[in-house]
Amino acid sequence: MISLDDIQDMAGLTREEIAAIAEHEHLAPANAALLSEYLLHVHHGPQRVQRMICEDIRTAIRGGDAGHARALFAALRHFMAEHPEAERGND
Image (cartoon, rainbow, N blue to C red; front, side, top):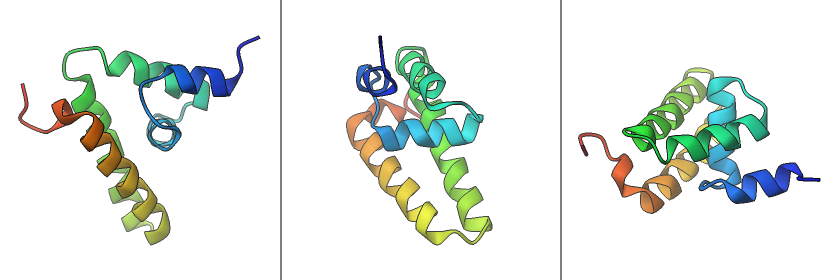
């Protein structure tokens, strides 16, 4: 049987990045892992992931949750380092 850990390990993102997608899209972690894998392979998909994480950061800041915003920012920094194609304006 495939576990959630197996699914997340097969996705091209970290667990923190997958959690940000799950939060943004209101998905279960397994579904967010599948969506993240898909987005990494479609045109402008990495930019979409970057926007999702940025929107989550803004939401956390507006909600006064600085700790969560910092964690999301760390996930964003890692994502951008691993996926430079996600930079805005990169077509």
